[in-house]
Length: 300
Ligand SMILES: [Zn+2]
Ligand SMILES: [Zn+2]
Image 1 (cartoon, helix red, strand yellow):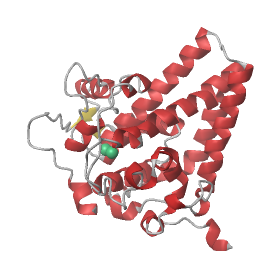
Image 2: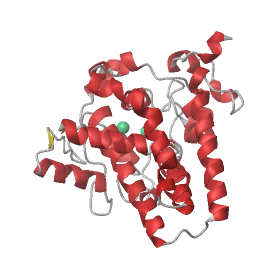
Image 3: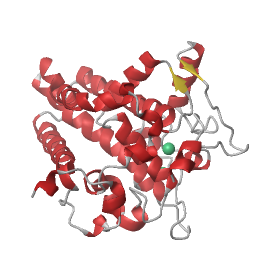
């Protein structure tokens, strides 16, 4: 039974078409991810029954945490670390990694490896989260615990330094702080600043993998990414919902191409650039040559 507790690689697991298994079949020790997802949903449901109206201070606190966590994920994890669309000052990077982990996005190396794999194999059977092959719930949530760990050494040779890899050791304490931290204020704050906020942030991110990969009329095995306007609201206008733009220019730090496509993540990058906390920003243009993403091409 020891094998049941080892970490399986995504490349091994996807060959077995894990989306055909029941949703509770976790890949090795990724059972901990399934238990975490169940925990925050059960706690959030209890919180919504006990404290359906938490008061405006707690509510705004939860919104602020969703906003900060989203920035950690979209600017820190996605644009800076996974795509190298900008270079962050180490302190700014550390703050954004902390916010992303507090948001429940996992360790930076795991996130970046899974994401680079997604771009390299988008909408093929080797894609870690394609709704084409696994259906909506696979793309939305199930891949998190059923796809296995993405091969970090293969997809993230540039993230081998201790400043990236050491974060995984802080995952449990950061998640404990994220889940329990509201207890310091009140029982209502425990539910709203913790599990309810974590569930909202989780689903906001997961919609990028599920509904943002459902463009109709695309041949099987080809990139089905699309821009989804309504998701801008759930992402608090941070830009991740312009997913077709992103797949067209994966190396660009900018996701929204006009004022009609709000992109607060890019606004933060411009501010960080002004403060010299971000350099080498690949600003990108909607009509120019596609920004290359050499790391992804090499890993594929
Ligand atoms: Zn995608
Ligand atoms: Zn990406």
